[in-house]
Length: 249
Image (cartoon, rainbow, N blue to C red):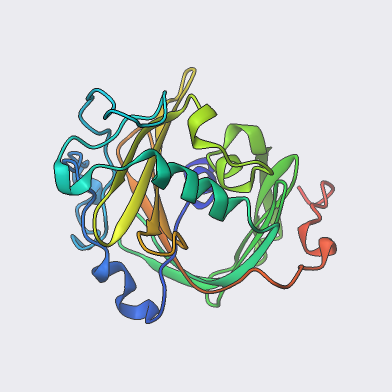
């Protein structure tokens, strides 16, 4: 459950055509990691994040953010600012999602975000899972077993996506910002004591900077990818959607 919690807390989404969305996402502009044999059943079309090869920042780029060295993938400081502007342009978001687990299991459902720190993932049947963050904690509920597992929001990669002020230039966990003709990609890494390094790769449409998907790689090298569609940033979700009942444990 702990692995599932960490993975769910940072997964990703794509635009139209959810059934084929994951297959439309090209690999990021850096080498994919070697995955454990147990994860080999996941479709090869799903993007696999990995730490980019360290390189000096290109002239004129934002300090503290590494840029891709290849000329056709070099991300300018303007790209970083456009991503910041997009993420900070909305306080609420809702839509549909498709999640691809490390073993190839495909889940889908609806999600609701209310910044700062609140999110709800409602998985469609037959999955009994529901994930909710209330600004302080993240709970993964099993509605069938009537159990839940709670962890601090600060201990999950989800907090990066739910921050009130998204600022790549000031985020010490950002290890790379890359861009090609299709996607702008941000890579964030975090080392947790006694656990290892988590990697979060967020992908945006290179033209509009709209959120497309994110992938979480856990310390064992397992990827969980979520693609989003039908995004709505004009309606504010009911705050009561994000309540965690701490007596249900």
